[in-house]
Amino acid sequence: MGELAGFRSLRVIGQRYRILYRVDRREVIVLIAAVGIRKAGEKADIYELAKKLGKQGLLR
Image 1 (tube, helix red, strand yellow):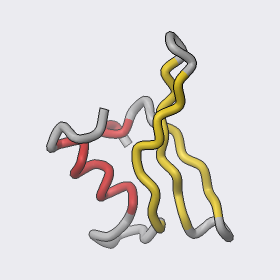
Image 2: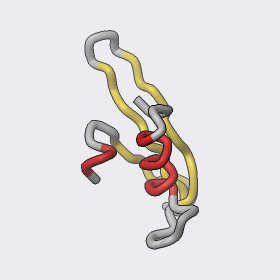
Image 3: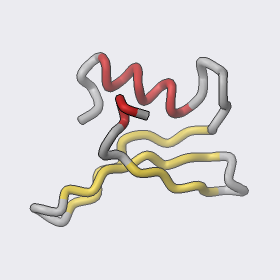
């Protein structure tokens, strides 16, 4: 997950959904970056969507 380096993931609601987040320790802030269903190998997979957002500069 090189494009999502620095982000962490939580599994919720029966482990189907993922919450991608990043912790900024300098300011003690947790930023929720994306929430969605994990669908490995599909375009709608939350990690694939997060990578697309990152490439567009919308995920920091």
